[in-house]
Length: 175
Image (cartoon, rainbow, N blue to C red; front, side, top):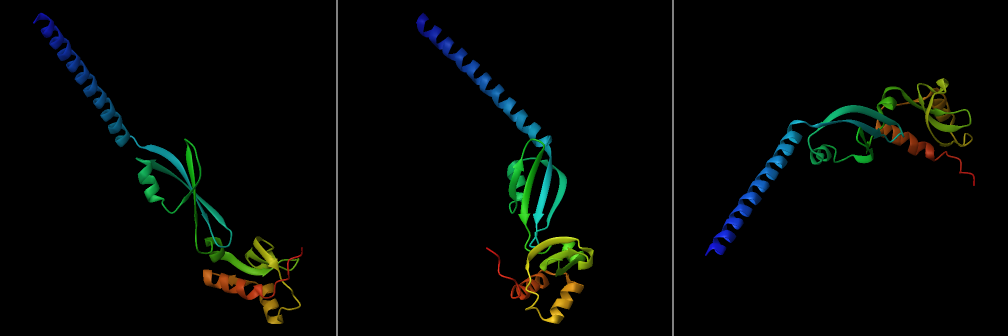
């Protein structure tokens, strides 16, 4: 009988000790979760946007992140480019021309006869993007004059139409 009560006492003590340890462990985890809920991670987020005309814009902002799941839900259309403890770089392709092009973009011909987009009229020589060489001999004179003066671009449709039209006048690529 004495032996059984000793085993029972050890069992009860072990159970009480185990329960206290388990409860304290849960409280520690709970406190850590509460802290994470109240103290979000602040990180620099670099939002890169690439446009049809090749322009890349960057917006840098500071974000409070409570959970990475919520962050990726917000930016589900963005692709991760790079990440470290201080910043996350994400990129999104925009199916439109860039704000720069809408504001001040012109199609024109650069000095070597390459179809280019300029920041301002072609006379500025401020090339944003180059495409292909134009066969000036095949080009009608009014089209040539338009390109020398500069063809204003303000919409995605204008951009695509001009490219499609002038592609017919491109010189074959040299091999």
